[in-house]
Length: 213
Image 1 (cartoon, rainbow, N blue to C red):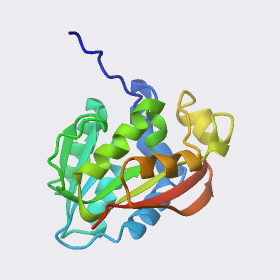
Image 2 (tube, rainbow, N blue to C red):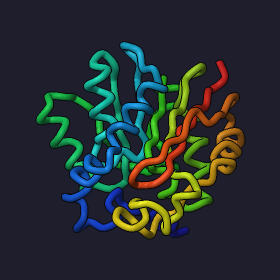
Image 3 (cartoon, helix red, strand yellow):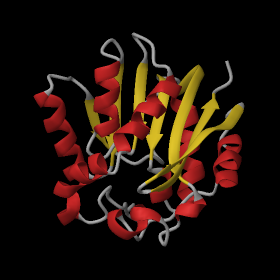
Image 4 (cartoon, helix red, strand yellow):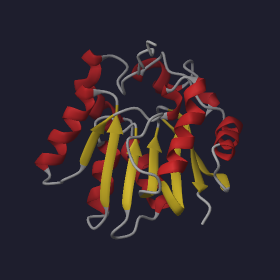
C-alpha cells in the first residue's frame, strides 16, 4: 500500500529565504531565547542531547559551545538547512551529528538521550503530528531525562508579532494548555510551563517535561 509522503515547512518558510534566516534570527534576538532554554536544560558533561527540528543548527551549535563535554545530535527533514548546519559546525571544529528525518519517526533507539530540545518547532507540525512527536521524544529519553521546549504562544498567531509578518506567516501556534496536555498524553510524568517572554518575533513560552525515573 502506498504511504503518503511527509511534508514539512522549512525554518525560513521558503527555500529562497534560507540564506536570510540566520541573520534575521540574530537580529530578532533568538539566541537569547536559546540561551535561556539551555540554562533550563542544565546539560552535564557526558550527556547525550538531541534537538528535534534543528534547522540550520543554531541551538545545537550554541549548546555545544556552552557544553563542550556533552554530545549533541540534531535532526531535521530539510536537507538544505542541514547542509548549512554541517558547514557551520565544520567551521567551528565540532563533530555534531546532523541527521535527516522527521520528529514523528526518530531513528534512534529507546532511552538513548539524556535531554531532548525543541525550539520554535512544534507549531510547524500539523496538529495530529504534535502528539506523535512528543511520544517519540519520550521514547528516546532515558529514565530521569527531560524535554525542554519553547514555542510561540497563541497570542502570536500570524497576525501578531514579526514572527507572522516576516518569518513564516503560514505557520500556526501551540496554545499553552494544548502543549501541557499533549506532554501528559505522551507519557511524561511532570509537564510544566517554566517561563514566558515577549520578543520582537512574538510571545514565547518555555516548557519542561520529565521522563519517569
